Amino acid sequence: MRTIRLAVALFAVASTAFWAASAPAATPAEIQKGFEAAARSATPGFTGFSAQRGEQFFKSPHGNDWSCASCHTENPLGQGRHAKTGKTVAPLAPAANPQRFSDAATVEKWFRRNCNDVLARECTAQEKGDVLQYLTSLK
Amino acid sequence: MDNAMKRHAFDATVWLVALAMGLILIAQQAMAGSNAMPADNVRWKAECGSCHVAYPPHLLPAPAWNRIMAGLDKHFGTDASVDAQTTAEIKAFLDSHAGRDWRAWEATETLRITETAWFRRKHREISAATWKHPAVKGAPNCAACHTAAEQGDFRERNIRVPR
Image 1 (cartoon, helix red, strand yellow):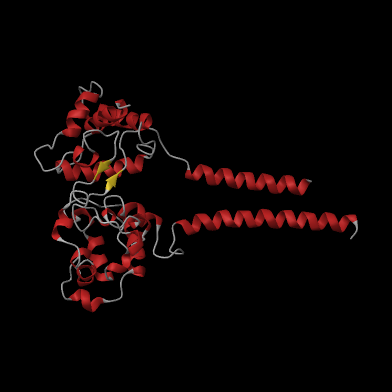
Image 2 (cartoon, each protein chain N blue to C red; image 1 turned 180 degrees about the horizontal axis):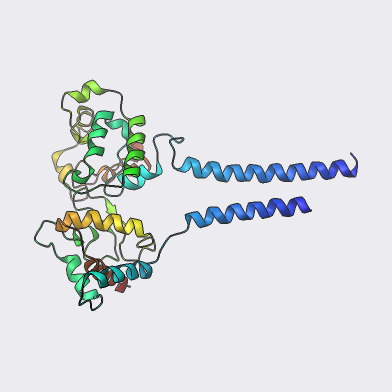
């Protein structure tokens, strides 16, 4: 009896560790808090994020060939399509796709690369927060 | 056997089962990111398959892949860069599964699979109109016709050309 208990306990511990290691790291709200902290320290007159500003930013080509919407489409609740390769892109709005904005490192990577593609520069914390505000406002 | 022996046998069985389950858990975790499964790697699939189909490594030789991996920030017009550790892992995977035929490739040294002699030969029956079809968009979009491309399956039986 003691053996079974011990073996089950060991297995339970191993499973929990395994599960914890593969659990998602963040939520959109947590990631937004990170942007807010960064925006506050970067912008003296920070007044918060705006979904409307985020939507405009998202759909504007910013003087270049692509906008965020070029691949993520005008309706981020729906499926997107890569502007060059035609490959389908999963919906970006968290309401349509719970995988989105669930890992800070992934969010960081995609903003870094895609802002470089669209704007030829990094996006500021204000801009990222506005975009996330817009995306989480979609239901 | 007597009761003491039965008890020992039972204990031993329980421990063996628990150990086996634990080993399977560990092995699964280890195998997930390794080359144990043919021409598949979790990081490669995730990073190289997000904007286009993860092109099978054997379609280009190692020097081609090396050049691609060295210029990810200028990857055919976009920024596809990843961190150093991921770059190294993907590069190692591509190197070990790259195509062996360098000589054919050296004629053009192209980094585009769609411009290799092999690709042109395999797709010689596809009309220009098909390549321009809105559902296809172009040759890099394998999945437009190769319906199982996401699973690395390019067999004839799974081809459906849009009309």
